[in-house]
Length: 211
Length: 211
DNA sequence: GCTATGAATTAGAAATTCTAAGTCACAAGG
DNA sequence: CCTTGTGACTTAGAATTTCTAATTCATAGC
Image 1 (tube, rainbow over the protein chains, first blue to last red):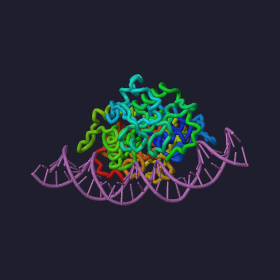
Image 2: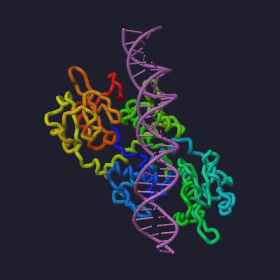
Image 3: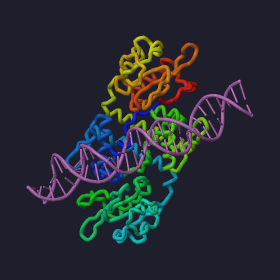
Image 4: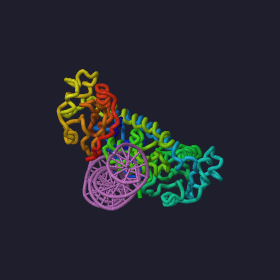
């Protein structure tokens, strides 16, 4: 028995786009350009002969079909993700080494991640760093920064926001794409959200989204 | 929330290989060469840093890790498959147009698929054909033949066997890879098995597996 | 109107994946 | 113990897919 399967990478692009309702934001998560995501989704729609999104001038809306399709796909990727973590030693049982930007470190509790619930079991003591090259080289697993930087080929998402001299600023988590969403990253993100506040949508900064 | 995902196409290659316990047979299902499957799986093992198979001189054995990994993946692909069929009109609610080889047609019941349960709701009246080019061109959806032919880029699997002048011969189902495993194909295969006998393993014929 | 945003669309570059051909280790049979 | 056949492995290069970069377009917000 074989399986009838549409292009798997297209599914992944669709799933991310549907979660964000934006190709641009999905592209950040996936570490590619928005054009690439747009193409993948379009190709998927082509092979399924069905429209998954309604394209608006500024964003996306799921069609009825897309809405029906999304939950199973999300579930699917969750299963794969968990199952992979369960069998792959490459990641499980390892504390992530995180670099924290100079500015952000002033806002983190002293001795972070100590004192943040069970975060210390996921995250090692951080170093001060802001160069994505360290992530690429494997020297560190991820970066936490107060501004979006150019991170070609890395996942780069706004995960929380802090109040800094009268305005809200996003906290960005940069890591390899494979690392985004692993249990340690999830713990990190939810702890940050708890420490600071709810994540804000990433509007406003006119930054380019790629380097 | 993003997902930690290994290479999806590698997962697909692994899943098929594990089901067949053979790269060669998996390759047939996937419509590629065994070398390609071998590479995909090896790449997957590399990124997971784990061995999924024990390689024997003649075939494969799942490692403990591989066995633990397989069920979730199979489930995953089943979910995707069903979910896709549910939303894609390209395939659902359409009778497959099948070509049947000259020789095999002598063994099919008269008026097949009539009289074979609900098969007529999945399969249209067949034509006589044996040229995979018709499948490639989309003129027909699949072929049923009594011998393995070269079908570059198409799925080509032994799905049943019949007794013909003193020896068992396999029935091969050739179709586009996307079509293998859709509900109509499943109905076709299980009906054939029922009409004839249990499928035999595809040993013995010294045929090359690719064209 | 003017500016900014995000999606669509290209051509061409980059990366991945596949094939083809040959190697190897072993099993089976004489 | 030699010969034959099988299936996995390896590799270079080909083929295909995927991505980028640049541009275009429609529209929202000012």
